[in-house]
Length: 356
View 1 (tube, rainbow, N blue to C red):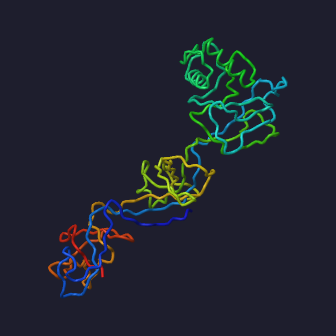
View 2 (cartoon, helix red, strand yellow):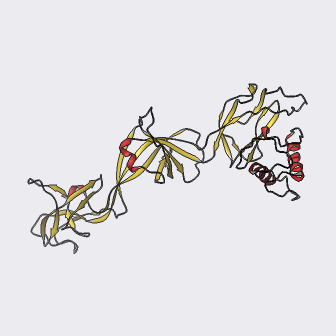
View 3 (tube, rainbow, N blue to C red):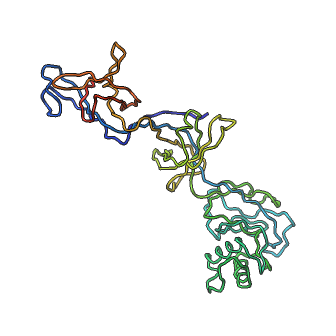
């Protein structure tokens, strides 16, 4: 169960102005020379919010396991890789940001390359093949400079000129030249990724289907839990702030909230996507997510000290009128540490009320 702290603030209205006023000192306050001096505040109109804080964890979005797919490529010494297995000879360290064209890891010195694109690579493409995976490969290799002469028409068709571009790619990375695209030696994701976990170290044996590492999008998200009592006030698309360990805050937007309760915490799982990049922090960092919950809209706002509970059970404020105090009935809608929202037929914006 997460720690849950509550803070309150008042927004969208000017701050309540407390003024120490002596009899006859200000034209905005009636003459009260016959009465003691009063500290007063001016009635404002605005919205009242409650800020609810949740303990969260800052992490990277979209975790994606990178699984080894054994290929028939040979290593740098020409020795055939063992069918379906091999030895990890290099792996990108955790926290490494990988851009299109970067090597992710090597098995038997054969590299697996990251390419930027939005497709699932599932087949050994050959001349005559068509599809979205063809378009993604042609676009990625062209972006890396393998179509400098412009001979390849970047479309959904794999023909001779595409094969020539693929052959240049294979030569650049020391991959065997084959008649098909070496999809086992490529991992494709829509944008740059960051290595968030390394499952295998150099020297470890790896077999087809083993997870070598986990990568994630470079965008940051904060995950947190929402208690059932707060669920109605927390919605997808709602603006929140994330307080970082150094005390600074960054704006975020709630991206998702689970449909059901988590069986362990008994609360809803929520995710907030940060609106801007955060540098210099590792993965799984403790943060605080703050969300503002509306308590009263378009209400008259007075300091809590202006509220008086009378012996007859009525609630009033003491308005200064015609040189004296007048008890004005009010209905309290909500209270924060700085302000109380009230309704009243006999109180208006700009009225002065006594707070002492």
